[in-house]
Structures are given as C-alpha cells and as structure tokens.
Image: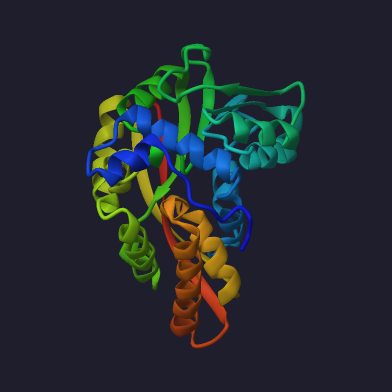
Amino acid sequence: MDEQIKCLESYWTRSVERGEKPSGVSLRDHLLTVHRTDTGFTETCAQYCRDDEGRNTYDILADLIDPRRDDLVLDLGCGSGLLMGLCHKRYGQQIKLIGVDMSPDELILARRRVSGRNVRFQQALAQDLRFIQTNSLDVVLCHWALTLMDPVDPVLDELNRTIARGGLLGAITDGQMTSAPGYAEIHCLIYDFVQREYPSYASFELGDPRVRSSTELIKVVDAAFEGAAIEVSPVLLRWQASASVLAREVARFFYATHVLSPPLRIALIRELRALFRAQNQGEEACFSMPVNLLLVRKPT
C-alpha cells in the first residue's frame, strides 16, 4: 500500500461521526489535515484529465490571461503552485502573480515550484484578502477551491472588492454529475464506501453546496458582483489509462476517500478497478469527469 494512502481524523470527521453539522472552523481544520497528510494530492488526476482540445483544467484557466491587458493575477487557493508555475512559464515577466492558500504545507511545495521577482505567495483565508488593494487585480483564477469555501459569500465579496473594473474571475467548479459517462456510478461507489465508516458523511458535503449547482452559483455570484457578466459553461474531461492507474488516482482525487481506514481504502481501489474494467470491457479504460467553468467579467 502506498504510504500516502492512510485514514485521517479531524474535528470535522468527529462531528460527522456524531451526526452533527460541522462548523466552518472544523471544515478548515479538516482541509488543512487532508493537505498536510497528502500534499499535492489533486495534481495527478487534474493534470491528466483533458477536454476535447487536449487542455486540462490548469490550461483552461491559464488561457484566460491576456498579457497585453492583464498585469496582476491572483491564484486563489493556489495549493502546490501548479497553476502558478504554468502561468509563470507561459507569461514570464509580462504579468505579476500572487498565490494565496491557507495550507502552509501546500505553500512549501508552491514556493519550491515557482519563484521570481514577479511571484508572491501569501498564507491566508479567501474570506480575508485585506493585504490586496481594492480594485487592483486584473484576473483571479481559482482551480476547484471555490467549491470548498464555506461560506462562499464573503469570498465573493472580497473578490468583487479586489478585482478592478473590467477584470475577470475564472474558476473551475464541480459539474453536473450525470453529464459524464460512468461518473455517477464511480461517485456512488466511493460514497458507499465512505458511508460504511461515516453514515452521515453525505449529509455534510464539504464546502458551500450552492457552488455545486449552476443555477445557485449564478445567483450567489450575481448577488456579489453587481452588473457583472456571468457565465457557467460545462466542460467534459477524459483520462485514458489502465484501470489500475485510474482506480488508484481517482480514489486519491476525492476528498471523501481520505477519511477511509486503510482496509476500506484498499477495498475501494480494488472495486474501482473492477468497475473501470467493466465500464470499458478491458484493462485499458477511460475516466470521464464533468466540470464547470465559471467566468465573471466586471463592468468597465
């Protein structure tokens, strides 16, 4: 067994175990615990899942930057700095980059990955960006982190304050589960395993549930960004690999699996491998994942 595959315990899991709604403080503790236990765990799956143009979700966000127009770019929830590194490689000194994350462990990896006079990292909560001047950001990119921020309203209020007129927010969020072939079946299998140890887990999803619904997401964003142009576009991603590789990495990608005890984690990976083989009628398999691209353009 990979030494990174281990169960964890946090204030959040203890609340769920008792059937109690976890607090925002316990959510942050849980996320910090996950990222301390398996730093950078989202990278592999996110890098290899690609759209019809061959782009992964990091590419999709980096494509939103126009160095002829944009000067200061914030990566909110930058994690281990993969998106920061990609933007730095593409645009070099043409833009300035700020990476913000609440996890000190992820920021250690991020600072190792990318550095330069135009690169800055800050450990902070997305709900409090007081170190960023009002109307100073040209672009804010957020790679899957918006889904985990609860409550999300103060985050959006801070982004509205810091993004300049005409500026852009681009975020990757969860897509409609049934829009990707086989994804709902994989999701249900994973949550079936998690609920064997935490029967109430599905009742207390991580983050603000409104971000997972396109309709609700538009409503909450519209309330924060008055007069902005808001668009939510579905994107279908695919990763072709062996059933064994997909089972291991897809299991690792889901936050839910990090609470499993080692025996259940091993059993889950085994059943995921069998499911991928059954879905694809062989060892060579394909994992399809739905995401949404949120674009918010402030008025000029």
